[in-house]
Image (cartoon, rainbow, N blue to C red):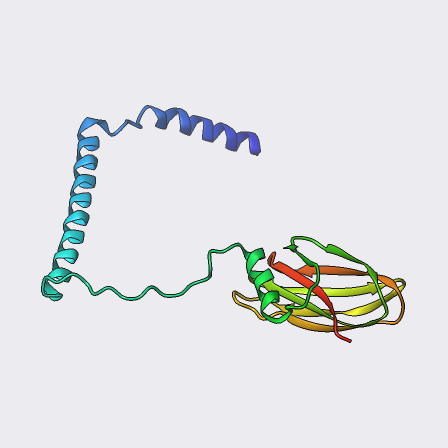
Length: 184
């Protein structure tokens, strides 16, 4: 059966190929004229809309408005560092960058005492931070980012001289800046 169907289609192709003819020069000219007419109509419509807008405004130029404040074009990492400067003016080393994958920041050595960890992040998404000390790990905290954020303050108690490892995970590649400041 499949051989008979293939044979019928082959015969049909052979018969119809002789009957198919290209449209010719006249059809091509009609297509070009139709496309030119459509393009001319589109240009005329656009000119009419502009002329109508000018007539409706009385021939005056539109009034200038103050520019709308949008996201700053300043470097996101610099803006994250600035969010720290606004709240954490105590001396301390600033660590900053962009969280594109899990990011590890090592703070060594840390003496016993109470600290505040300031974390500012700029951009869409958020930064999750886990604080590890030796074999202990503090549950992860999530800090929301934004265009002009305030730095989050996370209390950290250290019972003996140690190193801290901060594990940052972000959504949507936010810029971050952090600083550890002794509070007492």
